[in-house]
Image 1 (cartoon, rainbow, N blue to C red):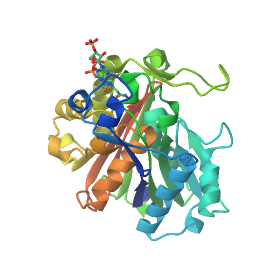
Image 2: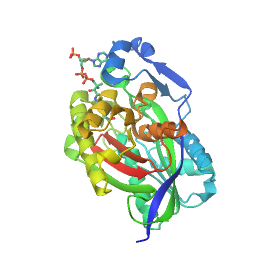
Image 3: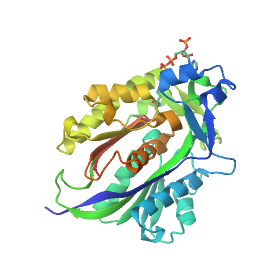
Image 4: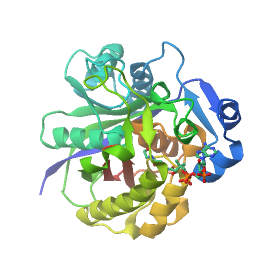
Length: 325
Ligand code: UT7
């Protein structure tokens, strides 16, 4: 059977220049390098400069992804951008990126699924490509999360950072089996009953402000391990694969202990899990494409590898994708 598949033909990422260490944070709040490293695995995070917006980070990551793919902005007919920290309340930050890339055709829009934003955006773009509604898509996760942190709350401000990552997807004809290159399946979930465990304390309609991150860390942690293991199982089963077929897991980079908990539950060895949280912390929607790009660029992830992408965030929202590179 001939089907269309969305093949990842290039990845790119961008981290702002300014680095904030755990020692820097210990001067702001009652915390320590030891506590942050032991409880989260985080050592440093990048912070966007004044005047540097989510669209700027996204555009740089997108340009690098296009370069890796050997394509130009004019080849792209779809941009889906996952973000919780848009440049403006409207229009979509994706349209700012469209303009900055010099792209004058196609469609560009944002997806809001907080830390799951990249997986949700990938699923949306994959559906567009498989249905023939687009041929070449930029899927981006980009955040300036530092702008919605309460810098006096040690339980959240040490956990997050800014950054962006992007992939280029191209529609290709394939056979419809798990031997195909490209996105083999995506599985998405949300549960609005969990709102109070992770949310921003404001919004356009409620307070006319952006608010700041509020989180019940230990409860989110417990849900994350359970839901991520479940959705990876579900997506592998849907792709006709098992845990032993997985070459690499590229998880949302929130906390090293969550990554270890999920791989243990799945029976996947820790050395198959890409970990980058140590040097960029939790960058929300940007974290999966940041980790993916790093592992593709350093040669760990190779063509034909089976890669599982997974993420969980506010909403709750969570999801996974199985991709043959
Ligand atoms: O991306 C969206 C998903 N978000 C996540 O995945 C985050 C999930 N949660 C976590 O990563 C962890 O729960 C945290 C890293 C947020 C917290 O780690 P924990 O092991 O669950 O610690 P805890 O919240 O139970 O706190 C233990 C202690 C508390 O003190 P007491 O009450 O035991 O005296 C906290 O007040 O650590 C204290 N604490 C800190 N101490 C030093 C909390 N934050 C800090 C801090 N520095 N930054």
